[in-house]
Image 1 (spheres, one colour):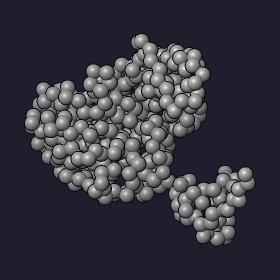
Image 2 (image 1 turned 90 degrees about the horizontal axis):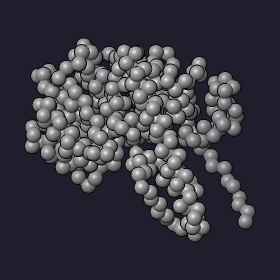
Image 3 (image 1 turned 90 degrees about the vertical axis):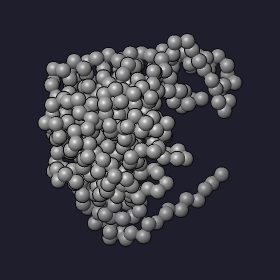
Image 4 (image 1 turned 60 degrees about the vertical axis):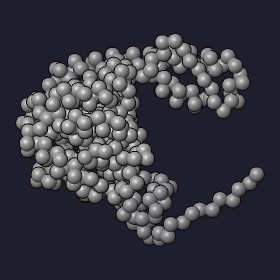
Length: 384
């Protein structure tokens, strides 16, 4: 069968294209430059912004529904000496989120000195599961916390948010997942995917939403946004590792975060890079995706996400090096488990040729590590 292909036009003139192409200085081929123009709607400014993201492209954080409420509550807690718990998921997006918000609040409001006024919590993947857990809420209550900032989770954890309210604990939910039929009864819910959303970009990572909370806090307290630049390594790693759309604000934050990693990386990132033996003169997105991110993720998959946060907030190179070494061991264990389970699963599938034609297949095994089976399942779908 033959097809007639029709090139879709976007209304830009050849003169506009040639002007844009000339400014790429030869690092884009003409076909690639034309493709970029078309993928960005035929708009020269959009195409330039894609190649050269600018900090000014970030949206006003107060466009988020409930942001004003969230900052009012956070400022009240900080000013009155309330105890705050920073709570996040156990994957790389969650642990970088916790490290970002905890580190910023500790450095700016507590002079970098650990205090019982500020703590963090990451649930155990196997004992507590995903999201806000009852154990986590009870831990906050035991520590006499009156505010929990939930990052990369919480949007569907209505019962646990209600439990917290019964304990006198308010919630600020910072999430990027799609809400359920009813939003949790939190003090504030920051999620651009809520149905009454007023924010112009809904593809931020969980750590990105945490960044917007801190950006809003900086605006309220007149703190220079330059302070936020110190933690952009974490935001960039979360964006790349969580496979969110590399457009809009994600592209801006990843761009500046990558520049930060290549100029003045955080102590924890220095330790991870050294442990991973990344010898490139320039750290790339691929390095974040295949070397840095998986190591951070391995802690939550194989042991505890708390180990990842301990590493990410460390400012002591010897301590960070030790923690990075421990997480590297867990990453190697993850790789080995992945290999063994994949081979076992493939043997089961190949044993019955009919599996190749089935719409769905089921494999199982004794002792398969719960933190790895999801990766294996994704790999199996590439063939079956």
